[in-house]
Image (cartoon, rainbow, N blue to C red; front, side):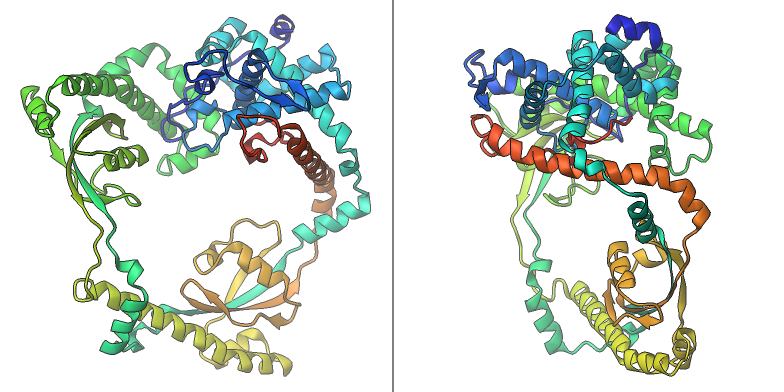
Amino acid sequence: MFGTIRRHQKWLWLAIIIPTIITFVWYFGPTSKLDNGRRGSVDYGSINGQRVSQAQFAKAHSEVKLQYFFMTGRFPEEDRNSRFDPIGETYRWLLLLQKQDELGIRVGEDTVEETARALLRPFERSGMSAPAEFAKRVLQPQGLDPDDFERYVRHYAGLQELISTVALGGKLVTPEEARQLYTREHQELATEAVFFSASNYLAGVSVPAEALTQFYSNNLAAYIIPERVQVKYVRFSVSNYMAQAETDLKTNLNELVETNYQHLGTNLAVLFPDAKTPEAAKAKIRERLIQHKAIDPYAKSNAFLFASKLLDMNPVRPSNFDDLARTNGLSVGVSAPFSRSEGPEDLNVGADFVKAAFGLTPEEPFAGPILGQDGAYEIAINKTLPRETPSLDQVKAKVTGDYKRQQAMTMAFQASQAFYPALTNGLAQGKSFSAICTESQLKPVPLPAFSISTRELPEVEEHLSVDQFKTAAFGTPSGKATSPMMTSDGGMILFVKAKLPVDEAKMRADLPNFTQMVRRRRQDDAFNLWFGREIERGLRNIPLLAKPQQAPPTMSPGAKAKS
């Protein structure tokens, strides 16, 4: 099949995604973490009475890596923030394959080829045409080969048929039902609101000493200073290796920039908000690629050399860190104290740095290399600061500010409650919401029309969540107002003016795709319900799974592949 696809498809490869999207840490091979040095001794258990062999597990694991790739656009080892469970996902995939066999699902070659083309279509812009390059640049670095890809495509196509078979009832959506659902999700409301902001009441808040003391006592946990550490560090700065990294990347740099630009798509605006043109965005991508290469391997390898020399020094003493740095002409920095939850504000580092710092002890006083955004770090223990409960006098300014804000918010919400009777009486008399607000010297705020499917409402989000707002709005009849609602800065009352008519032309144009979406959603729900029951029965005899769980959303068997 790989050869057949070669004749019909322009092959491509997924570029190295820039460091702001991913970091490169892979913690699990097909059997390494399981065997723990006891190759061949692992009991892989049984699925519905059928034993799982090491070879079956390894093949399924390769397919799960490809499933993750086509679902997210990157491999699991490239996604440090993912909660991907490689062992659990591999067993769930094996269970899906077993169910395909039980139901006699056999996928034809034409379907396999079409599925492969569909999976790869989102990457066509990368312009790769040689199958050998696809295998070399995508499969081989992950320990995969063309057989793994062909096997995955065949099983993925079978999975789509399995979903259709076991969730057939989910496809039943009548035209009238589709219209009703579309109307429910897309009919918009016209609304107005009046906001009561705490900032308008701050000036009127007094701060009695006794009340401040009571407030401090009631909220003591908020003022406790947690345990902190302070570390010494040697930074191997990225700036020292940028020229060398650019030279190494020069041959393929333009291709990598273009590929990343095409792949990132709408994420570009989030990553580079200041880049207003394609050229500016590509310049940012170019800089990030060079920076990543400068950090890993160059800064990282030099930090490793320092760490190796440090570990060779006996006896192990914290002072070795300063001595070695001085001998090598390196400067030693000292961080500001930081906690587990906040990390060092004066260093451009992440969670790995914090974890390593809090793991330092007098017996093991060094850690590294640790990669940051601006280089690689080697760190040493300097000082540990215990948890501290400050006195009121020590944090009086902060406690006073917090007390005043809380009191002002209470006053703002009470003002909304005081206004509510006048509002309901005025509406009952036929007055408009705007007129009633004006009479009470309040400013009504017209809001943009929105529907249940609306995801963003900037005018509202600074006060409360969009979901809270929509729940209140769609639970209120036209011509009525909500009761006072607490917000992040006081209170709000919302008036629902009217339900706006649905745009019939737009509905007719949208209905075919909307109906398909509803069918797919119901089909997925039906399949996931069925598969959940199968997991409980089929994976109960797996020693490596103490408690089988549902698959994470990124690996949902019924989800569509995407770039």
